[in-house]
Length: 390
Image (cartoon, rainbow, N blue to C red; front, side, top):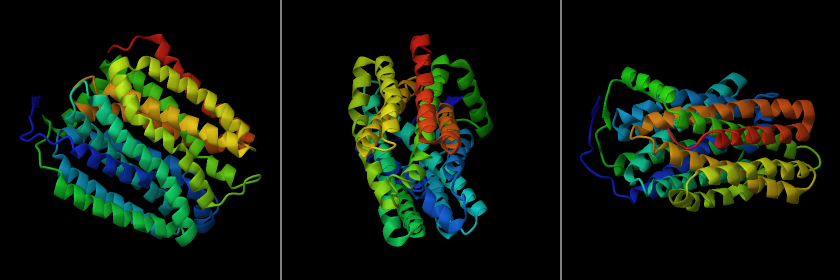
């Protein structure tokens, strides 16, 4: 294996641009969440029930097959191609008239969005020195988490005015423009590693097999994101029913409450650089577990729902940031690290997004909150079993 050194160093001021691109791209995956009842009514009964889960499945597939390309091919043309494919999937969603087409487009959005954002994050991490990596990742996650949280508000408002199909059509145009901007502004650079694709996949598998720390952090991330998936795959259906009877715009505005979780990302990254990630991870997961008690009380009281929403978003986002701060410090093959960690993380989200609607159908809001709290409690266990060393 031969390491290739870039001919140019990308200026650090590029990180905010990459964070904006991260936010705009990841938003494409989350626009559907407050619109699930509307989309099902338009396309067919229960047509959108599993749209969140198939999007996460597409995300996981990209992490396994596409993200490892980030180490071995030039990133600028790779990102342009992926963003164009993402725009096509968004346009397909806007035009979908059948359940099968809607779900297929959702899976493609997940695949392309995953490939883009998980190419951008390792790129940003590579720009920072070891003692600044947490801050750089924090900037990226601030952009990404802001995109995730604002996407629901934007989706609700646009859908209320022009319908959910118009929202996805506009998102397709924005994604195409983003492809043009990155193609023009990202400086060309050779790949980080001179390695065939099959060898890169084998090396990624070896990395997962040999690093206990990487596997442990992937498990913590998977369980925390599963709790996140439980909540966001069910909340729109819950708010659409008594006692709330909210429409998409009201659901979108409520999602804005969680935006403070994105604000906390950057200072948490800096704190992890100074203090260490273990204690902060434990505190975040404990907060997340308790937050589901507030969410349960919010089944009939809006104030408790808002408090729980703020707490669970802060906890899950903080855990993700702390995990990545640890993971990207293992070695320099950051696309491989992203592939392993984010595959586990995303599969957790798939499990949560699939289990959430089932729990809600069987036991209502109480069962949903118990399931979310259980996932976060399980995530706490690995933080007490071993020290944070590879």
